Image 1 (spheres, rainbow, N blue to C red):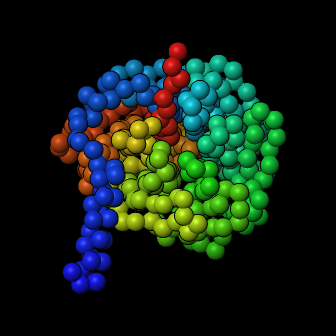
Image 2: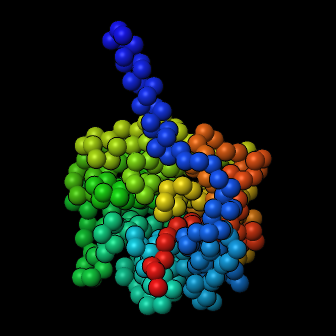
Image 3: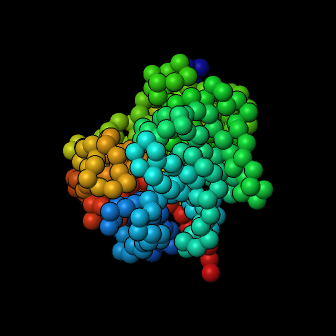
Length: 352
């Protein structure tokens, strides 16, 4: 075999192996999730305020975890071991709103405020540290990317520290930790010399890598071998990545979700990496008649999104899936009330 033939053959084999890495036998989504212990925590707008709900993986049961009339809880993130949830609380109104970081047990007990003025938190793999984005300006603005730097709050000590290279980190949003703790992935808009892109940021260093992909809200798979993100208002995508490299590169798209009519956002991986959850709903700019909400695009945190629900799709199928089209065994709705159900995060509750 000639050298060029060997190269082509090797490249094809690598592509096949890469596809097989996330390709498992296709099963009925509803049937498989019906037997799962996985849960999803998400925000929902009910009784004129934001609450956090825990919904079963098959969508058959949903419990109001917070149940706090007049208090607006948003953007929940479950800890790696599923025992705790960090989330945001909005207090005040308009530009005087203060968005703070709180933590509670996964059953809703033990609520505690840990950081004043914080945006879009995520757990570090150690389960003891929460990364978050400090607010850029003293007065509140609902725009997600009005942030400056990255900070870390260590729960056991109660101490907060800045990222070692925090100064150039400007206008980031929706950060996500790699499972190995080496990288943080984030979207940047109108900052750091970029119009809009997605970045890999060294968690404990100064290296910043432009991934060169449009869209937003990237998140690592549980094994760290793939990234899923919103590639556009109507597309989710999955690509491979090698996070153990000092200079990680993205491969080609190996899975896509399309919706020609509705927006699809807020993608997250199931703990076993076989499913993605996401928010789906019509375009809109919120409803200012609803207390505790803002006027902006429906996908933004704190914006009322009438008709939005949480969906799950099977990554194991590979290729692509179009929501709203058959075969329906590849996807399903987990909520069906349209109550601004957004920002879902999967977790596996600890065994009792």
